[in-house]
Image (cartoon, rainbow, N blue to C red; front, side, top):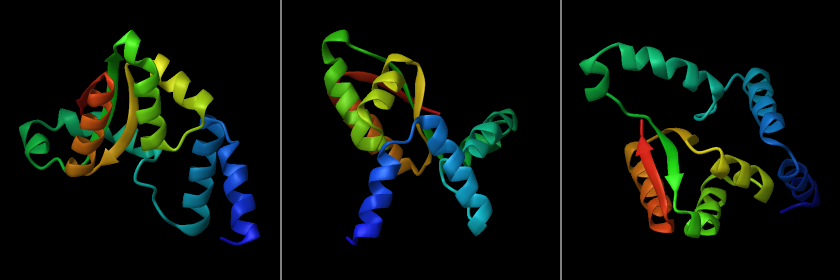
Length: 129
């Protein structure tokens, strides 16, 4: 990578969860794109669930929710969450300790199942919504 991209990457690693969320919104607005795991998806999910059985059959996006974890496996679960999200140690630890907590949103079925399996193998209890 170039020095410029390395510098940007290092800056991104230092962002808090709130700052990263704000950055995603700004990028979406500036470039007219939509991030797959944006906050807008969270707002749309309850309405989709209220639509009834048809929404369940046609569901193509899933949220991976860490419900709980074995206390003895906390570090393994933390590592699995960090790998999946790319978060820093502090943010990932806060996310794991806040269980039940959505780890990733709007994933395809295969990707959501793979993430669920990885976290469960580490000692976490996960549901897909």
